[in-house]
Amino acid sequence: MSARRRRFAAGLALLAACAAAGIWRTPQPLVAAPAKPSPPAGAFGLDQVDAIARQLATVAYKETGDDVPEALRKLPQESYRKITFRGDADFWRGQKLPFGLEFFHPGWRFDRHVELDEIAGRAPRTIAFDAHRFDFGTSGVDATAEGDVGYAGWRATFALNSATHKDEVLSFIGASYFRALSRKQTYGLSARGLAIDTAVSSGEEFPRFTHFWIERPAANGGQLTAYALLDSPRATGAYAFVLQPGIDTTIEVTAHLYLRAKVSKLGIAPLTSMFYFGSNQPSPQADYRPEVHDSDGLSIESASGEWLWRPLLNPKRLLVTAFDLDNPRGFGLLQRNRLFTRYEDLDVHYEQHPSAWIEPLGDWGKGRVELVEIPSPDETNDNIVAYWIPAVQPAPQQRLDLHYRIHWPTDAPHAGAFVAQTRLGSGFTPPNDGSIGFVLDFVGPQFAALGAKDAPTPIVSTAGNGTLVATDVRRNPETGGWRVSLRLRRDDAAKPVEMRAALRSVDKESETWSYILPPD
Image 1: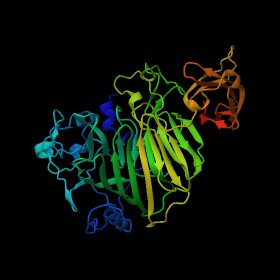
Image 2: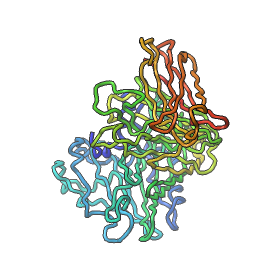
Image 3: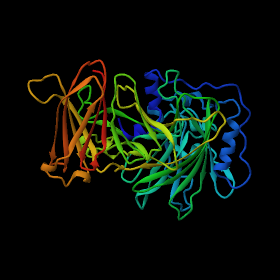
Image 4: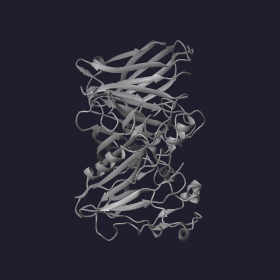
């Protein structure tokens, strides 16, 4: 699947995966609500969007942006891909600004339009739809017969990799999904504004960003600010996004959330990714590529500085796990393997896909990081979701303030010694005794200076349904780190086994490898 094709499927593949797993429902409109309130007077900012979100939370939900013509909504994907934004149609073209502003045309699965405004001075002004900004090629769409269909989303460009060319650095399209890039990266995983009832049997609700206000950047500035209104049957929200592109692109997010009604799970700072197969879970069929994934693990740093690594899986059945924490320092879905030879894909270049790291700003209190892994038959479904769930969610109409920073790094934060790879196979002692073998490579400076006589001690445990047959640790001269080899005999192949492993030397301890071996 080409990188371009995956870009246009951003955010929407998860909906298909959830539908296949039976955990998705289409949000249904309630009774009609009054017209959306206007922002209060004054210089436009988050307070003005908050006033709209707060008032909307007190009235019934009303579907918006759903008047896209049927011909566009039924447009096949291949036809939709032929509608491209013209290179000379940048909204800020000719103004000598550091950022460019481009738009997405509605069609295919992007069947809702959003309202867009530019903030230049104190008051916002509407960004009107203009079909002439697009090249319709052989899509079969008659631009002259469309009328005002609105834009499905927007993207920002910036001279990220070259001083003479602006690359796409940020995009918002589909529900509350958005993506960003750091230098020398290609699109991979996505972030979302909010997740509601993910992996709940009653079905997931997908809030939407319905209106954006984008600040015209300063001519000599290096950041871009945008505000967004979020709306759904059971939640509203006001968001501020501050983009700072570079070697480690960041987006600082400030949000005020309001619930219209109670929800089962309120997912904060959600990340959405794809894991099809990897070194810890080989391909179910012959494939020339050794690994196919946008992310290979969930990383968590606790308030005490302890690190945890959970390798991702493509399970046969829906798998939901949680990690209780108090005021975490961060969590993220990471792509740790950065060698082309680990993927061998000349089209998608998974080794260039970003990680995403959530850095809480302020005290998040008690809660849990939840990881959802959804079965996927191929790589077109974003089947991995991770988010923070506060221990106490707000009552309806009570404001919940959020403040965090999303990093989109190539080299993500990690412990002094961390798990570079997890490899899975049968037991290594012939004849095959039915055991399962794991090889974990720990790398990093923490234990790099230790010699063979001072090898760190492996601390390994299983939580029932399995017995460790053998454990070994030795220097890996190829990585400069330490390799831990494990053999496990599972008691009941129809049940999972939870395992943990870490390296310890005197007063130093590595990241903790936390793994679930799913049922056979």
